[in-house]
Each structure stands twice: as structure tokens, then as C-alpha cells.
Image (cartoon, rainbow, N blue to C red):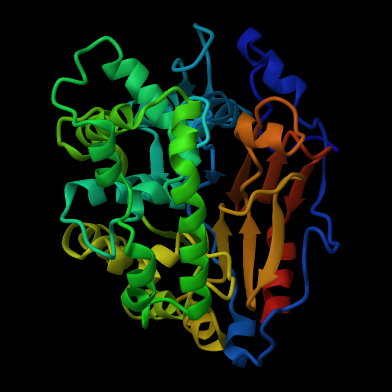
Length: 444
């Protein structure tokens, strides 16, 4: 079959991208690995939902999630989706929008940061889209917000609820610190006002009593499974974080100096990347589709029903500024970019799913759960989910036995349906509007 998506321009700069993409398309596979018809929470849905027709976004949406600091993968995915091209210069940072790119909305599904190899270049690639006046929606990912929590924790008064947030970032943030130190500090007198190594350790790490006090502090906010998981995670990271820094050639003095530079870059109004968190949204609703990084819970379902996405996004930013970090990061709002529907996460039950459907949301498009065989459409908690994290960054791919950097995107358009494009699947997956409607009815 011929491809239902625009064929990317066969320019010299695109040859390597074209060679790694499928050239044919097939109907979306209906099997246990792609469409899971098992509803995890069985219940009877009011008949009115079964009569609902899915409403599609007014304009074509290109969803690219979890680029994880791989600018090459991100730009190649934009080109593969037909929304950008390189006309004159090779290499990163030289994109222009295509005709399709000027008409479409590009939704970046979160997790722009961490892992590597090019955090700063990835941020500049996203910024370039804004400069090109593309319609861009940038969603919050858990890795993105972990950096913000770590930087804010250093800037605010230390307490039981926030003193672990810096080390909680873990080894995956170390490549970013290495990049920032090399680009902004290496050839400067960075160490003039930085305290000694032991003092930096005390400033960066949680105190010895944190592990005893945190379970009491978190009682009533987290499930018991969530508290146990958080303490175990911190025991591991507290033990290994300094080792990972040293393995990257960074002393704790350098890490502390770099964190102060990151505060300047990301948090100060004149910082190069101040736009990143300022432009970020928690959720985006387009027709019956809700785009987010991870998932939903009962409380967020009620918020979306009673107040809508505009309120949710406003609450996201206001809580970052006004509430203590602990209350924010373990709240329903943050659960939206963290959950995997585990026992440790805030629950999504019949009540929440009912509210979500009443809010006119029938399909969740998410990242967060990386897949090695392209996108998957599945039914979770009685709600249709499109899992669209297709393992783009080269470091994750190497660890999972995949070649080079990833290429792919999820396209959502009423005329075509849902298109799953991935260099790791032999064909382009296409699900028509009618087929998705059938799966929605099946879910309820």
C-alpha cells in the first residue's frame, strides 16, 4: 500500500532518515501486543457514553514524546513526520517548516531532558520551533520536572519534604550537568565562591535523619506502597549519586557550581532556557483526545470534569510557585506526569474514569512508557490509551539493544486516523477513525 502520510523530501540531508523508515503501511495490528481488549477495571458504563462519537482535533497533530536529550532523534522525527525539513545546511538547528508543518500542531510529550547525549542542543531544537512560529505545545515530563524540583530545592529553605529532591534526580541528570559545566563554567573562575567538598555534600544531599522522618511526613499524602518505594529509591540514589558524578569527571564542588548555573539558565528571567518551564503545560485537550505525559487518577478526572484543562494547566504553574515542593510533587497534578498505574501511584478507579468520560475525554495520548516496536493502542482502566514513547534517544536504545538514534512520531488526523511511524516497526501502523471508534465502544 502507498503511504498515507506525506513522503519526506528526498534531499541529501534526508537520505539517512528515509533509509531507516518503513515504506509501506498496514492496518494497526489487533493482537495482545498492540490492542489489549482486557479492561483492567471491569464495570458498567452509562449507555450515553456508548453513543458518543469521538471528536477529532481540528488540525492535524504530530505527537513526539520522550526525546530525552537526543536532538538528532528529535529533528529526524520532525522531518519523518513531514512537518520540517533541512533546506540548505546539514546538521542540527537548521530546520524550516513544511507546508504541512505550518498547518499542523506539534505536541512535544515531555521528557526532553536527561540521559543525553545532547540536552542543550535538544532544548535549542525545541526553541527553534517557536522561532519558526510553529504551533507548539510543550508538555511536562517527569524527567523535566525532576530537574526543576532539584533546582528549586536548593533555592528554598531545606525541610523533610524537599531536601531529597536534588539527589533524587539520580544518574540520568549527570550528562546535563556535564554539558552545562563544559559549556558555561570550564574556562571560568567557577570555584572562587564555591564551598569545600564536604560542605557541598551537605548542601546537596538529604540529612541522615531524612530516612526516619520522611515516612511520617509523607503519611496521608502517599500510599504505603508509595512511601516504601520512595525510601528504597532514595537509599539507592543517596548511595550512588556521588559515584556517578565522579564517573563523569565532576566533583561535588563542580556539581554544586553547575546547579547554581542551571538555576540561572532555567529559573532567572534572562536565562537562556527560562522559556522551557514557562511554556510548559500539564495537559492539552484536542477534541476527545487528551495529550499528557503519563496518565490520570480520580482527582485529576474530577478536576478535568469540573474545571477543564485550562484550570489544570493554571493550577500546575501556580502550585510550582506557591506551594511547598513536597505537596506539589506528590499531588494529583504531578501524578499526571509520573504515574504508571502502579499500586504506588494515586489510583484511577471507576469514579475517575466516569468523570473523564463525562468531561468528553475518550482517548489519552501519552509518553512515559517506552516501547521497542513502535506505538501501541491499549485499554487501561477502561480508558483508551495511545502509548507513543518509541525509545528515541540513543543511550536508551543502546541499553535495550536497538541501533543508532530513534526516528518516529504519532500523527492524529481525522482524515487518516492514528498513524504510528517508527523506525523499529516494519510498516507504518494506521488506525482509521472508524476503527478507533470501535475500540472506544469496546472500552466502555
